Length: 485
Figure 1 (cartoon, rainbow, N blue to C red):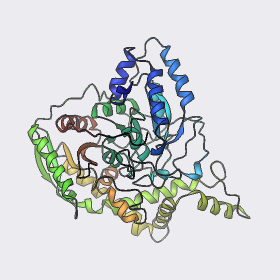
Figure 2: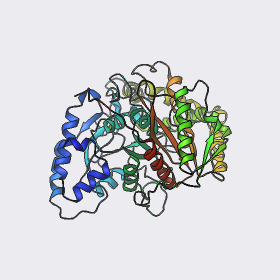
Figure 3: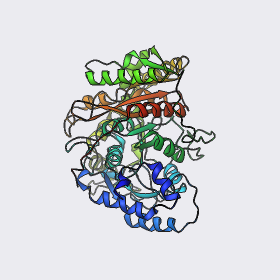
Figure 4: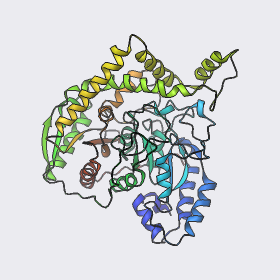
């Protein structure tokens, strides 16, 4: 059974389908791993009894052709799960139990997956280190005092520690790719609209996108295939034919043109990140790809643009948490207005309050034109830069993050330093494009570092194929001594 820790999602699915192992055995294995990993604080809610019951039911089925036949999975606690607590890492939703299922998780269960539990995350997905969660921060299995990244920190932590064979996260400004880079795993942010947002607790509606987090590229293709698809309940969902990402995987990237943007060489970037980037370029060259220097001139405005657009949308989306219909309600206050104020003051953490205040300010009368409207115009320019580049290149290669995982508490008192963690990931969300982070090396401390591949909208297959070839050549190995057990 210990071999299951080394098994990929694809391999586990095949073993279950061939009846070489039962769904119950796999489920019990991961439950045991979870029970031995409390120190990582990866989970907010566990569903062990229900998972065992569903695994037993699955094992009674004769033939099941679903993509995720009988595989137990844990998911980020931002996806609403019917009759299972969904908190979004916040006090204000600490006892919220949805009466409905998110479209993405429903897709997984329809393909045969089983829910193991809900994974820790930054409060309302606002954070780059998992330290804003009301339930305490998750720990990176790579080291005792390291953050796993954010906001999908619990997802990355659980995946790297083998508490789930794969998982799903959400990415608003890098919240899948940055934690994937920090934990030596694979994370893909799909094209905006490829995966339904219905039933996902909203942060910034024009940026949020669900995506897969896995141990390797093949698993990533499989999970993306399972979770994506048109949803009439989401007005931004793309109505297109479902693709077979896994069966269409191949490593032939000869003749592809890969762009290297000069703007991603930022000031004070560690030498090891630059070295890793050059290594990635060499791998692509040797694989037959053509390297082309490109320019994305408005990249330098991406972070300030993001931190106007995202908080503006957050302030609007989070207005619904007022303590009236559901969620936490303060017992203080002599009237309705005071109850609202106290509920939101007590229910939201500092980072959420900070972003709501920024968002309300940039949307307010007299500042809307100066900030929000201008940010939307700059966002269009950023998208135009990418569109222009994709007329000459097939994909773009950049680092995933400007550093490796940092220590818990290292950046909590410096929001700007924390925000700079998203410098390489944010432009992709503003442009609505797909991007994948794959583990590509380690720094001098042995902490993992990732490389990011970006492609034009709906070209996930291309970056999956390039990533598969790079993964094959890099042959990344991360040895983790299970110190938390």
